[in-house]
Structure formats: structure tokens, C-alpha cells
Image (cartoon, rainbow, N blue to C red; front, side):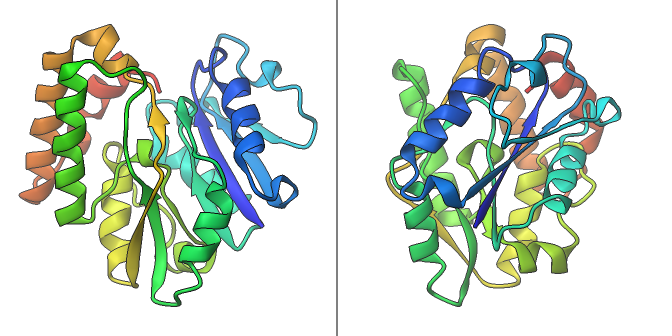
Length: 233
């Protein structure tokens, strides 16, 4: 079984379609278990999920601390593999079979999917190319790449570190100490809404600063309120 953890905050416009898309794309949909952890939505996100088989949890105290939602979902997961999926990210066809195939290599402890945007313009295409170079060399993947890992390894690590920003990047650093990370193709398609809503250059500059600080070993959590306060996803 693959447990799919989806952290949400005001995702009523995305959550149901993302879940339905994920089920349609699975080779074995009956082997998926969905866990939605909501950090206090005010738009009826949880109420909009009609599938009674999906576990739903409301945790308003997790607001602006995504790692808490991810760790809570991990605690509730029963699958051998846990996939962390953003509510505005669409997985490729047969993603589950691809993951299980990659994990046949015992040295592989997890991985993530190739990255692309929905309806990219030239700026987003350029950013996509830069991102692909970045994670191919650095093996550090971000949350919108649908990171997955063996549950036993995640449990050994204690889940996500208590970092209020770039929590998946820190997790990747820990996972790499346990084994190899696979890069899956075909990739995911994610929404560019952060860039559309707040301006491409403003968001790209902020993300670049966080990337530099992360790689220099400087703290980034102090920037979390600025980030999550403007981009509640």
C-alpha cells in the first residue's frame, strides 16, 4: 500500500480534483490510502471531500507549520511507502507502479518526480530548466515534486525535521544518508499560482535567497511567517 499524505490550507478549489486525478492515474487505485491533514481552512476544504474512504483531520494549530501536517499524516500512515502530495500538484499516469519499481532497488530509500508547471510562459520554462539542473546535481527535492520514501526509513529519521520552511529539502538531506533517491519520469505538473498571484520576480528572488541560505547552512525558519503568510499552500 502507498499512503498519500496531503497537507491543506484553504484548498477547496483543488483538493477534490487532485484526489480524483490521483485515483485515475494509479495502476492499482485500491492500494492507495489518502490522508488529508488540514491546518484550519476557512473555505470548507475538508467538507468538500466526499469520498468516505479518505481520512480527514482538522488541525488548526498546524497553520504556518507545514512540517507538522506532514508528520501527523506520516503518523497516521499504514502503507509501506508514504507519498507527500501538495493539493495543487498532479501526478503522472501509473505513478504508483513507477514508485514500486524504483523501490525494488534496496539501495533506493525514496525519491521525487520530475518538475514542470501548468501552462508555463517563458519565465516559468526558464525556471523549470534551472530547477532541473539544481536538483539533478544537488539531489535536493522540494515539496511540489511529490516526495516519497519507505515508511520504515521515515520512522527511523523521526519524520520531517522541525523546520518551518524548506522542510522537504532538510528531509532529503537526511534521506540521502540512508540511501539513494530516485528521480521519477514522467514528472508531476504543479500550479504556478504563487508566481501568478505575487509576481514572478518577487517570488523567484525570495526562493533564491532561501536556496542560498539553505546551502550555506544558514537558518531559514525565521522567514516562514513571511512565506506562509503570503502563500497559504
